[in-house]
Image (cartoon, rainbow, N blue to C red; front, side, top):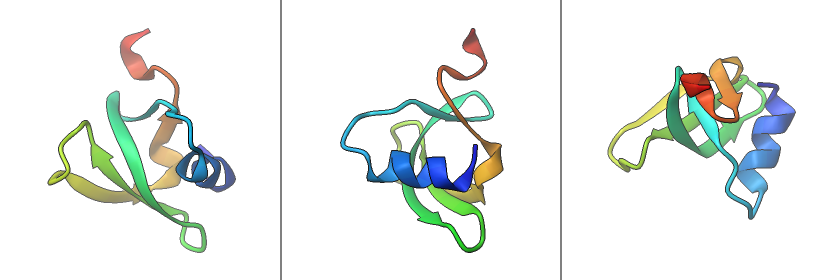
Length: 64
């Protein structure tokens, strides 16, 4: 995913599916300068991680 798209998803009022290695994530913050995003993995607010934005995928993930 590109940094600009991650920022658009983060700012969107719509729910847009984003996956990290096939797991659904929720983007909590985008650091455009460093190309990193803080994400919540699945629906667990205690499971957050900071990852490179290029590791994120929009859509259904690897289930298709």
